[in-house]
Image (cartoon, rainbow, N blue to C red):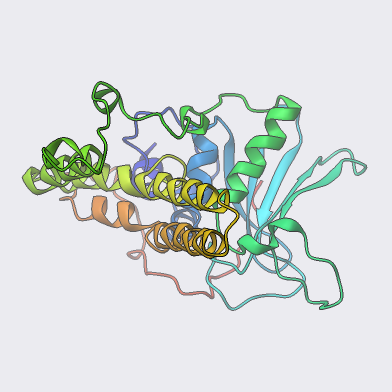
Length: 307
């Protein structure tokens, strides 16, 4: 479908994706812009075989995710108090599971939205705010419990901390204190250097986007893995049960959060890099009618709900 290639950054991904929704808004600029703004949520869910759509809720845009049992997930910001933040970047996320024909089925899977009542107890995930990774993990966990994941994504498989790529597993990591052969010590830095060399050598913005995706993928990219590494190092420091061990633990936890925040800030970078590639020649029948799409601000027109 033309809209899939035009409005999603993952049209050429190796992982099969759930299809786009089947309605006329898919080919409209305003809907494609909303889809792009929510791609950091939609893409991981489509990789899991879940069909997604963008709709307008009570006061903000939401992602509706169809589930195999006829129920659905509603993912969006708090609806009661409209926010001036742009779509796809709220202060916090709320994910609920509902059924259109069974009002008794309602559960909150995730709620990281800040509470308006200072005296009300905060949910544990509130500390994550607008971060997407914990949201996707919570959805994965609950849908796995319910056996409602149609196609578990390979990106959800969490490798042990000591597991490296096949090329790196073939080489035993030497003692860092032994500087006799420094080139054999920094195998992980060398792997990233090789990725940088590939980026420098390519003349294709599409290929550059694919390499950038290796760093920025929210579930399996290098930044996410680096965040996991800092968290593991923090736990190791805390095992010492010394004052400085606890201090180092918190410093490394902050580093993990900063790395993940960088990934969230750059979640559209892959899309933008791919958009720099020369447009393919299209037939007149494939060209969209109407005015050219305009970059939307936080206030996006509110068309009727689509089903």
